[in-house]
Image (cartoon, rainbow, N blue to C red):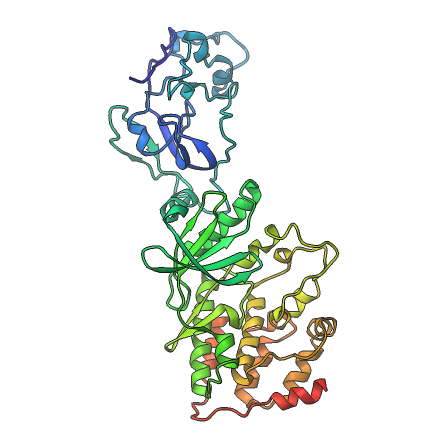
Length: 457
């Protein structure tokens, strides 16, 4: 039987728990003594436990004094606020009854300001910039003898993260299929083939975990045929991972370069339209990709799937061991960066602190559109320093637009996406209209690579 303290004379002997859903980075259930990341907490006695453990939780014993026990005099000139009243008059449970240290509930009622729970470092997740459910939404549930009342004014973070949490032990890790700034990608199995993105994040750093969970929240709210399917995440350190459907096709980078695929204007338009649909959907959800490139777009059986959106936002928390005073630029990265981003690049600024935006995603799409027509990046065979200047000053893009002959409509899309002015770039909704107006042709456009080669020679 659970140990129950004896309420002091003059105090209400019991009252209903007022539970609200919480999440912690690390916490122990005070009923079953097992670790938990998600659970409930009583607003009165501060009891923390699993939702299912509320059925076995003792009654809430810390409450207000009855009216005849109020120490505040009716003639007192200083009124007692409820907050001061509780702070000054909450009884000491340890003074009324000794606690059995071997009891699984021995510390349940001592979780107040004078005796915090130090068994695990914890942090409650209620915010993260996410809206709470309306405060008027409460629901009484019959959870057993305790008759608890669970508040439904809870953060969506707690609810949805619990729904999508996948124990790492359930994953079957397969071959390594890719690497990124934020970690590695493995082919694996979890009720079928999946892609497992292992994130190299310090699991003991709570700020880093917040960033990770925020990106998981972005993933879990996406459902679109042109966006990779999110299946869940491993949320318990040290194994932090995002699990998505496995893309069986080739990357668009490979399709336009290494396999000799012949893409006429109709095919390139269909691919571009699918990318625009997926990106328009992400932007409508308030999600900025930050790393849109042909290697993050998969193409299989006439279907396009966009991957790795938002993961670039975690690059700053996984590169703390990198060399200082050195600007690291991965191959091909500069071609997708808008001028306003290149102008802010420096060794002192983390990549995730650069001014990424929706118009910056549009600029990156412009480079993909160019790749679809030409089969290569717009600026090649130049030193990194020269490319930084050519992109940051927009001089390189001016040369590309002046010397490549792609047709009026195709060039118009390039010039608007690559506009040096952020406000002049179209939205993906506008781009969808521009792509729809392209003439339907049954021939491949002439390859304009020699124009660029003449420029860089």
